Image (cartoon, rainbow, N blue to C red; front, side):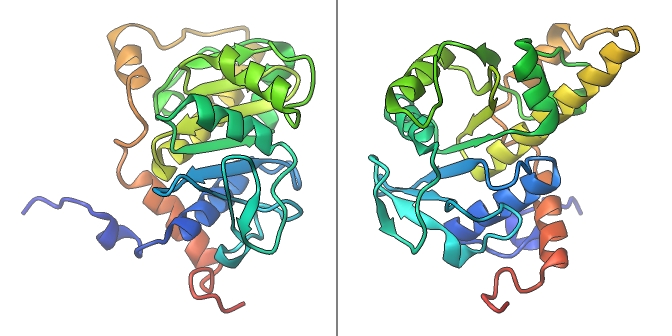
Length: 245
């Protein structure tokens, strides 16, 4: 009998707040761990957004810490303030209705390539998982905690799904939590592996039809990967979904 995996067989049912928390925690483990920096927004059916709070590490947030904000960044629910750079997300969501989840942080290798002002080649299939178009954005003249500069950065992205923000960090977009997780993990692996390959003197990037198949992925096709990483987090903190801590 063919086994067709479903979320119910692989992980427990998750609320939107729990999905956001697990995205933050899984990405922290992948290197998205620049102290209290970084923000995730998750568009809800009513037009509001769930968001991680300011002041808490991604490795410590729980569902009760997640805040809900409106399109102008006002906190509607929760006891914590919104992250300082939330304007980047607010401008993005105003211009890109196709984006459900947006994630910004400063992972080590992604930030190195952003600092260098270069888009790293894709050298292996794991670095290509999640698909999407990666662009370099250097069109803003100040921090994205300023609405004007944030809008300029979003406009410079165009229809791209991932961006290296020059001298800053990375921005990853998707239609779901799963997609952003897959794309963010693959992006940091792409940046890390490209750094090592170039240190060896260079290599042969992934090209042709195979590369194009990966690029066209919407990030939702690799069933099982997100679930596996969720299980790692739930094993590390068995109380994460219970509220007991």
